[in-house]
Image 1 (cartoon, rainbow, N blue to C red):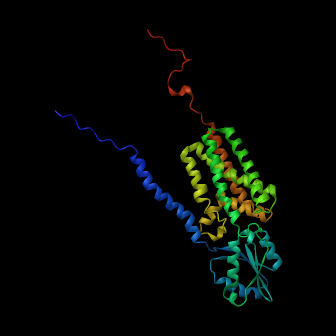
Image 2: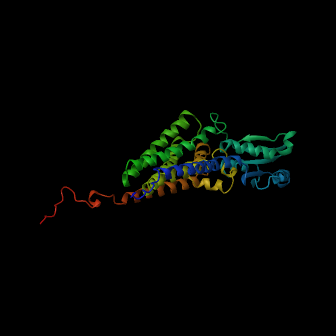
Image 3: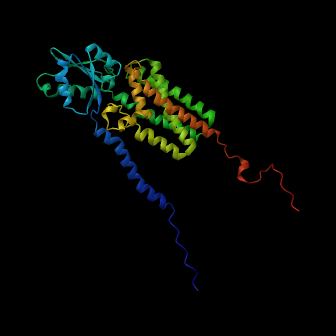
Length: 339
């Protein structure tokens, strides 16, 4: 008699094949959404803008700005000196000063060349065809990087490098104090190297060298400690989550190529809660504005760094499985006598 029909076993790797086929389009779709959509929708959204001068003189300016409903958050200043000080303090991205000979725009290309161009266009409006609004760049971008491209390009390497440092700590098996020391040491060296490249060599940052180095170090620590903490607790899935948050979402939502207020909301605000966004804002403040308006990004980066170090420390406190925990007798253990 013929024997029982053997069961057909599933082809090895079939589940992995299906996972790859389905996950690859999903990942690409999410990446395109994160990178392409904010870039395609870049426009002013409640962008802080000053208006300076007597009420009667500024009335035409405010009427012109009213045509751009929802694009600008107007701040009133008594005179040009107050408006200029507000631009230097990073309270506003620019200001329109009502002068007898026509409106005059104060901009700060160091805060974002794209923003400065958008402000000049909005202030000129239809009258720009016959009489272009004059402008003064109060805080100009450095000559080595007039478009801010080099500074914008420095955020992604910081995110990738931080995730890589965190992954190295996890894969090397460092735990507890050793992991914390490694993360702190790596971040300090990253700060020195990054400041040497961007300031000393390239000249794309022009602020205090040590403040820039400390800023780069804090950015690196916030990313690497978070990635290492998630990896220590969750393993490879934690490292993947850290990379997704820092690189896939943090970089395109950072607003470093334009400004957080130029991105669709609430994505612009969310980006400032992540290390890449906070780091880009901090670098602009330290590199061009003598550290003004740097308290919020420093706080965000510090919270991420401390939280990551705490997770790394907690992961180190977990008892690693020793040889005695596998349930088998060890060679040096006394064996029971056999009757």
